[in-house]
Length: 204
Image (tube, rainbow, N blue to C red; front, side):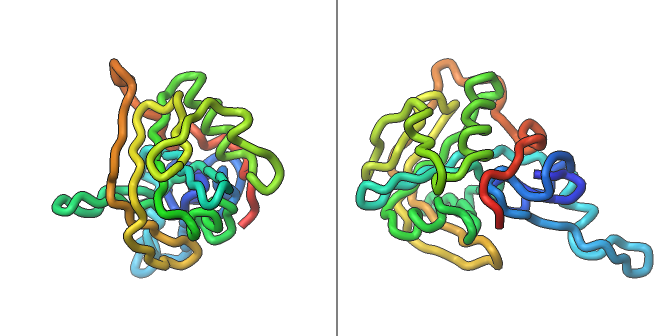
């Protein structure tokens, strides 16, 4: 993920500070700011996106015994009643392929400690096309069999109730089923700027 280049972790354009590889941890270039100007104004969202420092998430999926997970930079609550959350997954990511067959996904916030950074590196710098990430992380089966990472600061599992195409990413609309968090909760969670140096594990 690059703040100045606007590349985000595996999930999509996050527009945080630049630095690191030309693509996000999951390997897909995200939110590349457009360089032109119009009457002195920055073209596109180039002046806006680099100011953002959103949380990063690890999204996990399971479909017929096939597990996947990746570091994601695009995610947000998108409805109050009913409660809904959306996460965006790159078309080039293996997690997208598994999530497209899954009935539920789990969304994890990571603590800003060594354990959280290790999970960010594992799920951001490696691809499930080459290694079994879940053999290297502590997890347990959650609702609908979705893998839940035990070192997460907080997590929830949500039923997939819709999908929306958004360019090179798909938004998975989730209806929260259940979740949990660390006790006591950490003072903060891992954000985009914390993972700028990761090398993308999956090319776009």
